[in-house]
Image (cartoon, rainbow, N blue to C red; front, side, top):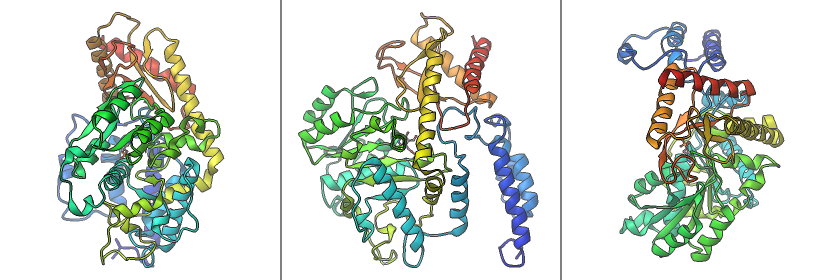
Length: 488
Ligand SMILES: Cc1ncc(COP(=O)(O)O)c(C=O)c1O
């Protein structure tokens, strides 16, 4: 069959795969976030069941014409809403190879022995960078102290499962009796939905307690009070090492002291999906000091290491805690290195960590550290541009790479409703235009920049794209000014 690779159609395979690669590379280097408007178009033809096939070269042409122009380009310099640029060449190589090699890391011995070993290496590197001890020698999967998952949500869900088992051992077997006894504390208004969802997914219900914040960190008095009020019923306290909105880094040491002094058995989880990147930089790593005291840490390399989706790592301070959530079956090899025994919610497991292995070997820690510093400096520069303008207002201190701001048009007396409305409309117009992208969300006005205690709908710059220049930063501010003229 022409469609299935064999020794006779290798030339054809090269031709098609080269064409796919060219399409992908050209796409990453195009000029806008989206080439064509998606909304308002009719795509019904794409829903038709393909009973007769289309030759692959022709299909690729069709894809390029009919689908590609509507894809969002996260690698473009004008995409400034999220850091997931996915444009490391080594990362792309790792992604392509991982898909081609078809290693299944559910089992080691017959499926993926060397891939398992290399995944262990990647987890070991992250542990080392973040200051967790390394168990040596690593004799089995329970000595590693981490797992690879398909995203921060998966890592957070597994961390909550660990917290639950650590709190009430054998809940895995016996089930949850009184869900409201299994509470999780998070900072109010800035948490990532994955914690609340995880609590519900693992049978602990919607029992997340939101604690008041100051400048997007726990109000420490409120944290102490919440612990007292829920004494004996808190299984976990979550801290953000870069919250999803403002990228503020928690007072890690203080939170650790308060929680562990109150009850050493409460699981402390650091969601460092973004902030673990600072561990690569000699200059910036002091900002995340104390993270090594936490029981678990979520990291999201696909957000911060310029590698393609999807890969995350969950690290656990005491590696053997993974025994709490181990499950075995005769379908998973009960052998020392079968990941399938310690990766809840995941069965067959592709070699997604290969992308990390490639970029870390390709750039090395020092150069990655420089990239992270450059990203931080670009965000500081953008924040300064906003501070020194009289028609924008800055809402956060730049801890990592997020700049949250609103366009005021120079009017200091806008009501909360009016300024929210204007900025929501700006973001809608931006989405419709497809040239630029900044993110939007709800944020409590912790610092009273517009109205203390109010809920704001600001714009957010956050980038992991090394190609962004000062001109790009100036251009987006002018773009906002121009579109707002049409809106006001
Ligand atoms: C702080 C934080 N945690 C977890 C997640 C979830 O990560 P993922 O989308 O990789 O599942 C995100 C995503 O934005 C995040 O910002």
